[in-house]
Length: 120
Image 1 (cartoon, rainbow, N blue to C red):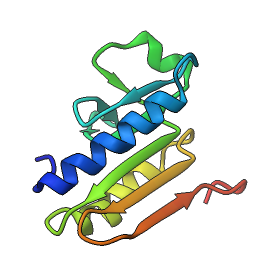
Image 2: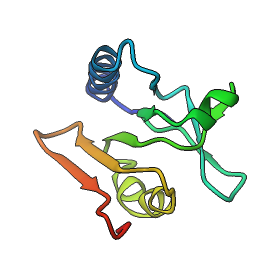
Image 3: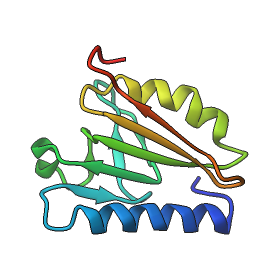
Image 4: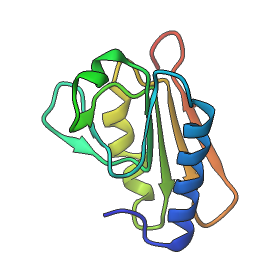
């Protein structure tokens, strides 16, 4: 289920708009919570609040993306543990993902997880 508050939705819209505007004219695709992200080497999908892919392999599919370089999750009290735990571990296995951004919907707080050269 998507966000559970107006604030959650507004934050997600602003991040989607910001990345879409910034990447306009590039070959990258910015997705909102309607765009499925396939978990690499599984048949599972997630629906992050915002995703960005610049990978040409994602242009070959119309139902989902598999290789996002950025995923943004807007945290809500009901989803924060999953977004920080199990979902984060699913995303961490993606070889292309570089940044995982967690944005609080209840306080002014952002956590950015950036993959280092050693893939950690």
